[in-house]
Image 1 (cartoon, helix red, strand yellow):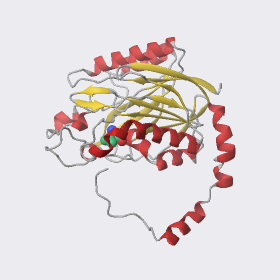
Image 2 (cartoon, helix red, strand yellow):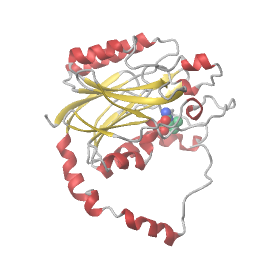
Image 3 (cartoon, helix red, strand yellow):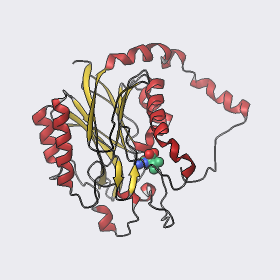
Length: 317
Ligand code: CDV
């Protein structure tokens, strides 16, 4: 298996509330075809790439809420994307909202799947770090109701051996948490793929709005470097149903350097040549976890500083 892949980040502009799944999928296929022309082996799409980001709205009607979710993958609306992957020989990572009945009760997740060049689903991840609240905040210009609409993912942070490397998935807010990368880093991950819907304005913390682009890249670059892994972060960008979202989709090398970056807030493909062997210099030396990581000593620092576990933080992040 070659250890070098051409990886594409397929940024999306806004998906209007009125846009059908079929129309959204047609956009994804157009981006995949463009990525193929650019030589791509693998295309990474954003979080919730089939619909508008409905957690920004208060929805009381159960059927209306369910209408934003997928009950199967693939399904009739997304089958053309799988067909395109097989026809073009391009793997992809897709973010979508999942309605699951496998345990005998209805569960909703913010999910992502990794699909190989034969259109076979290699793995699934369900978002663990859900931001926002489960409460309606009518005084805010828009909501983030992920804690109301989704359950915390129950699949952990697995890593799959496929496409010649070790691949992992994360979703949006996960990228801000070092644990996300480290749990996969401890499994030797070489390429982390994630998508995001990140508003420019955070109604809870407007004083940090100016730093949103900086914090996006800071998180992606730190996660990459500190685990010696490639990271691809892909936005749904632009003004979607009145909510302005950041772009800045990018591909980050294990050095922490950004090697490709989107320059628009619309549908845009960027590509990079991803040599998975570039992880080795970091994973075998500065971040050789087996040789240098000392988890058995970390608790001493907590005891000496008296910091203890951090409890009682405000419920919203
Ligand atoms: N979809 C997200 O997870 N968005 C969060 C916002 C709400 C802070 C993010 O971390 O980008």
